[in-house]
Image 1: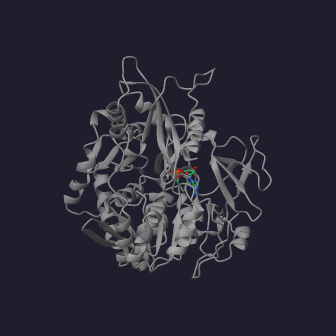
Image 2: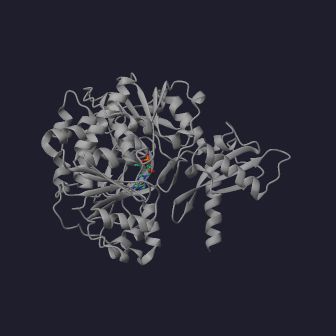
Image 3: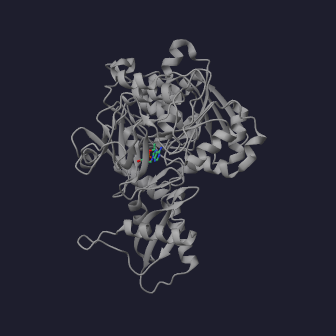
Length: 550
Ligand code: WTA
């Protein structure tokens, strides 16, 4: 095992992991003890009431546009959205889907929905027609908030339960009417739904409850380590759980100033934003760090001295990347592990603690992690097994929308949540990722379900059957690769493959479209049920890659 990197110097919220880990109890957190709560109120309104209304809540940058809003201004806009939603009859328990680019309105619409007790369903801006339809219909959403551009991807006849579509442009043109209404909720009632992929079936709706803010706030304090003077930037879109929990809730619950960047990844632009806005904490994914590393000395052209802390999530973080950042930026990258379903950090690296490059870190205080065998027994340190979390903790999902059976499948052994990841834990308690237990694909930190891509592929008139895998890739971690068989009388041509790729890209999302398509005569299948053996496809692909490299 490699070198241990010493902790950063600084004024951190949590400086003694070991004793806090042994003594911390969620019941010590005041938010945990509330009889009624509202996540949106805690996130914005409370700060205004406590006298922080004039503090900058967000910097929005998009090409030449720059906008700064105070907490009071954010609250005013949330109030306006609350008015619009309520005058359209939205009430507690309704599902409001939000399909907007990464801009302040997206964050504001989520908060307004939650403040009136409805459930917010943020959708990633890269989703196309089929992906949106699938999610909205599964959830029987009542209302959709979108803008003119993204709205073009929606056909109203495909989403029959949506009674109202509200456009950002129209809402913004309407005279501001502030409605201060807050629906006080039982902490166990739903607030946020994120669709996420597994290896089987269509994406499932992971429902989070208001109580999750206890987890968001505490991990924001200890792991993001945000202080009042910080400028915090999480690069994820709120349609992904990282973008909502650690892009919106955790920093704002801790009253931080956040950065919202419209547009896509671009190394120069990212460095420029850090310099211009004085970003002090950056939270992103290994793929982005690998791109920055591939740009070599580019960082030297920028003043990045405001940065004091970097965090990573979503896919394995290579030790080389950590060493690069340590050398180049004189900062450590702190890996974190969690899932849409866990609702918040489970395994973390605190800025005040030593890190072991290659390890995801240690369990968050108040959360117990186990490595289990196939019978659900805890394995000794050093052995590889199923990464599991002892139930329960405040962020854990409330349920899977309309799919109780799926929800229960996460708890096959009494008292444990099973992640589907494989891992090992060393003598010091550090946990090392060892892969997935199932066929889920992780490309650039984005979780892609092979079933959803296969279903889309076989809708193409030329495709008979399809098996989709994650093929290891140096920059993106994995890329989506499809093996297909063609219908008779169809010839394999580059144009055909491109048309198949486009088919998935325009119906699901660009990140789901296979970067590689290979036509084969027959797909390997299980003898009894005839299920496609993705594992076999993947194994062969990895062997082939090894031969190509040697
Ligand atoms: C993977 C994202 C390695 C893992 C917050 C998990 C990771 C899935 C890490 C959840 C990490 C997440 N190292 N792999 N630090 N963090 N993963 O639901 O396989 O989009 O099960 O949540 O991403 O992805 P999800």
